[in-house]
Image 1: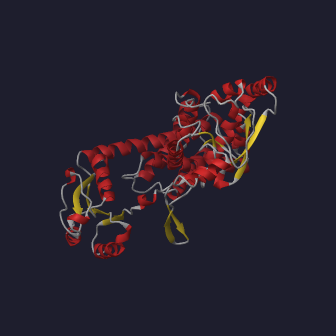
Image 2: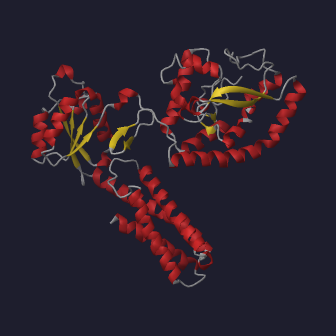
Length: 453
């Protein structure tokens, strides 16, 4: 039904715009284009995994695949019209309107269906009976997710575990006590009293897990493993494959594949725009530096970039010194090395504007962890766990740590730890809208100029 609905909306939107604008009669070319678009969308959506069960999966992921599939359709249609020299056959107004509106309509329809299903599940219909194997901390997290999301339509029956109470994680009172052992779990599943089973035992319990799975293979219950990978502090963890071997990433960048292209497109478009806007202010800053202090206009310092590679980073000179050796002293409040004009530049973050050139050329990004001097990297990578993971992405002109006030001098280890914590949170949460939010807060946020000296 969902496939029919998707194809139907694509056709109806195209026909609707022809009826709305009405400049010319419907032709066989329009029929071919509309039918081809519907078939191409079904093919692309199938390849993107759009036609699967979305229970428990955030709506944004489903809608992202809708737009991704439609982008493929538009690309093929435009290429076909260009090669066949048929672009003049179609109404530009109708075609552009169709290209823009079709994914919005399909996404709206899917959102309505999702909301309707969620409402049904809240009322107790279309539910699944769920059991959790293992009274563990991870098992409790699964139970909380089920309890806090009634729209998932999951009815939690309880926990099953063979271990003594002393060896089990103490559950919150709302979840009750263990209702049986693993043999009881298998019996319930064989009797058809359980639809879904989440196995939430620790990784070290591999023999017990194997034994449970062998027994559950004699039932019709759906079984899901909830491996406790959180003990490894995952950085953008996701399932993948090596040939036909399933693997899970522990430390990985979010910018592989389409996400990497989206991030680079963002940097080129917005970076070029901001560079054009900043060109006149940069010229005025350069003149101001030359008139107010002796020395070069720019200051270049070696810093770590993507994958820990050393890159040169350009700034407007704001000090009377240009340190870039084995020991680099951070700027402090009322630092005598900072020129009067340099203090103004640092307070307004204008000294960073030349790095827009790095954004456009590709060694930096608009948003990402701020790069540190090589000397500071070598110091803190030995003192802060996971410090170098911030270099799984390109360094940024601004970042999540900076808009939250964690910039400036790190005179205590805690300040640097908080900066790194925010950097890693950015990598985990990355998304285009998140980047735009950080850019907005960089310009209008109240915390971004804290500790700017």
